[in-house]
Amino acid sequence: ILFLFTDQQSARAMSCAGNPQLRTPHMDGLAAAGTRFGQAYCAAPVCGPSRSSLLSGRLPHETGVLVNSMTPDPSQPNMGELFGQAGYATTWSGRWHLPDNGEEGMRGFEVLHNAGVRLGIGADGDGHVADRAIEFLRRAHTRPFCLGVSLCNPHDICHWIVDSPERKSGDLPPLPVALGAWARR
Image 1 (cartoon, rainbow, N blue to C red):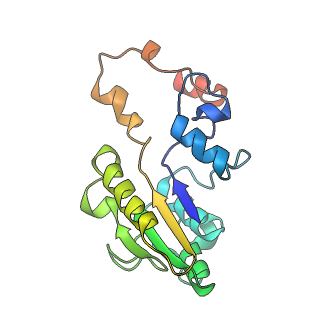
Image 2: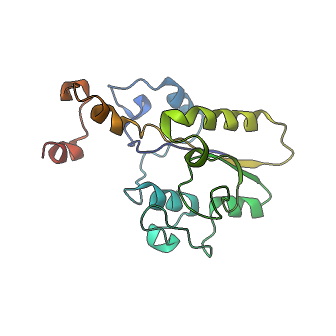
């Protein structure tokens, strides 16, 4: 199982989801060959609680992670622990953002690369995260595996307009209908 996470990417932010402003051929290929959840929602508006929900199948109030930097409730198993108990090799590369067993400890997973600790996030870390995941996928495996790959981007788009104030709103693709009124405030 290869479980890919991206940060702050809306469900329509891929061309295979019908977005005419984007060309995402590699993601489209993965979606066509795997499973893409087209009727899913995010359990929380920030990273930590949302990630704790994705990893456990529980809502943030059940995982104990209500805001970023909270440690998940150890009585709630995560997918690494559950797949590990089922005989899978469980591995993680990328952003974790859940203080668990210290910076290197990710309960239930062998850590290939923790982007938030070693190289920073987004453009500074995603390449290394992907490289570690590719190395893992190319290894000979003697048992099934569950590999979580957590990429920070497209999170960095938040900095695009702030870092370049000369840009105009016309440089941006149209906002989803739900965000239009909020963005015009």
